[in-house]
Length: 134
Image (cartoon, rainbow, N blue to C red):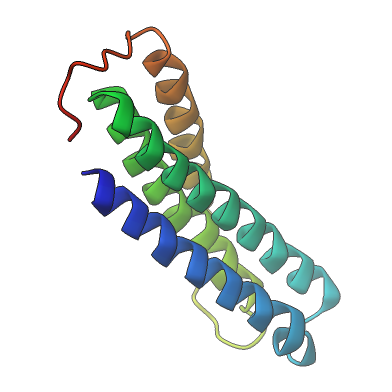
């Protein structure tokens, strides 16, 4: 699981940097400044949570913690739903996706909050070094 989380963090980090570059260099030619700023918000949350997934991969070395793994998956879902919907909403001047995206953003935000809560819960588990890491 540790390697999977580190790989996931790397892929999420790569995509965040690529989307950030796209937003900074190409997107500004096609959408309003407000939508570029919205896109950058999605990138910021995307990259922050990619880093957290990597940190969870490292923390999992110290013992198996289901709450840590769930936190990583909630962060992943948050990136997909929150940042993904923000990306799509910010380019609606170019491509019309309809109004179905609006309600998806808060679901992704809720997943982020749940992930942070699970990270908090994981601090109440003892880190037993005698356990075999996952």
